[in-house]
Each structure stands twice: as structure tokens, then as C-alpha cells.
Length: 81
Image: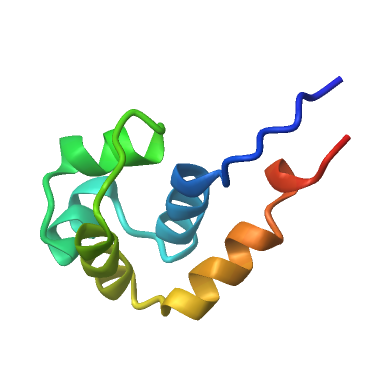
């Protein structure tokens, strides 16, 4: 049985957005003004970026805050068992 995690699957949603747009991690990182290693760490949940960095990453992926928030809210990982 899956355990409910109250924290949004932030990095998983970013990864899904990136792969849906067919960006490599290097392309997405460059577009967002971060390093590929940093973006990879964010996607794996190993880093907590500031709002400013998140804004740059989302801009690079051409995603609005509203779209991102909706994806977080509707993520299958967010559903309680």
C-alpha cells in the first residue's frame, strides 16, 4: 500500500513537464538558467529550489505557475490511499 506524502511531488511533476516537451535535462537546465546537475537534483527531490529558481525553470519549460499548481494538485502521487 502506498504511503500518503503530504508534500507535493514537485520534482516528479517537473520531470514530467520536461519529458512531455521532449527536452533533455541539459536543454531544460540551459533554458531555465540552472545546471543539469542542479535540475536533476530538483527532479529527484534532493534540492529545494527558491521561488526565483522555480520561476526560471518554469519559464524555460514555457509553463505558467497556474499550470504547474494544477499539475501538482492533480498528481497521482498526491492522492491519499
